[in-house]
Image 1 (tube, helix red, strand yellow):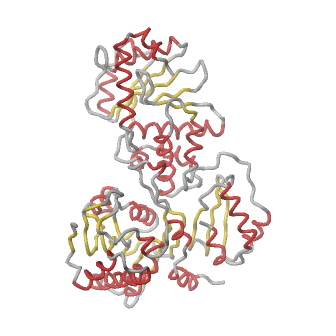
Image 2: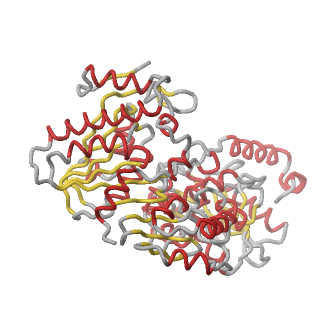
Length: 299
Length: 232
């Protein structure tokens, strides 16, 4: 996003070396269950509706050569500020002074963004409400117009964070291939997004690519991104004739029940995938006449 | 090898556990051994549950249904009047091979009708290691069932599993837990598999080959029980 040369010219060799070291430190500690990754998944989830329904071209970056680099969200519209997030899951956080302080990083990030004609929306995100209040009280005046302090819960696992944050839960439910998803499906969607985020190249990746990558997990239980699918008429007739079997399609997934809820399940691949087309071909070829003949194909 | 036997593991049980560890045990004998271990757990439960009129729900994974769970179920049904069964087809995965992520979503579920408030919920599994599958299925079950007591049962569990499972639930739930096991292991091999555990990957030892194959399987116990419940 930012070239080494630009940084050297604007801030000197010492700042460039600081950023190089900071960047290396961030990449080498790549684990799934981290505060930074949970926050990135939260942002991805809450932006998903805009990305899917309104085709918003939003990009994500992390641990790139920048002063505020835990997460950078770019809406790719010149008049929308670049959103930079610095995350601190600690009880001991202050704005500080001088090189390597949060305040200095924020000032330099603003200057760097102005040099590429972009406004900044810089956020210091903390997991402790008291720390948030302290940082708000001690917020340097010159940073106030382009920065603020936010709260985001910290926990050992992603699902625990989701349980504490209603907006996070709603965002994951939107992405989930169910009208009223069970806890295991919410956990699946969230962790698949987390895995996709951890595994992707974070230099500046379109958010839609992260969602598509997440969908490649088997299962992902992430809603189909397209609405261009329709059940094959012959398959419909075969399924309709099976006693005690019912089914429906929600967000591009086949959900089924047998014996009025005695058994239930979801075909793990969305209707716009090759695996679903193979399922339909199998049904047409085998023509199951009972649930006993059908059940082996439903997984 | 760091194995500790519980006081439920008499010499017969220890011999059965050794048979699981023995790599030479063929799937048919392995299945039979799991069923016998299930029967022993069934006897332990019957000794604990004195009242025949209690309501019980037994839940297992698909791979354990016809063996370990069947052993327990058959024993319980010799005396208890209200025993329902639930079976889960889980897919264990680490999304994108990220090491510290483990999930086990439910692809398919069989659950017999039961009252909301029941006396005993019994969750059984052939081995409890990371407790991911047990946690997932237990969370699902308590969405609709309110048990007085929750038995978590496995022939072999990891020394940290009890604590790990408790961490995932609020106190009003984990205070209901009662763990029953025959042995605790503390070692793992570099792949994370418990040593000696139950002698390797349970899907393979039971003859299912792999996770996909076990998920395509419908246990006989599910087939026979649902046939009695479905009126055509």
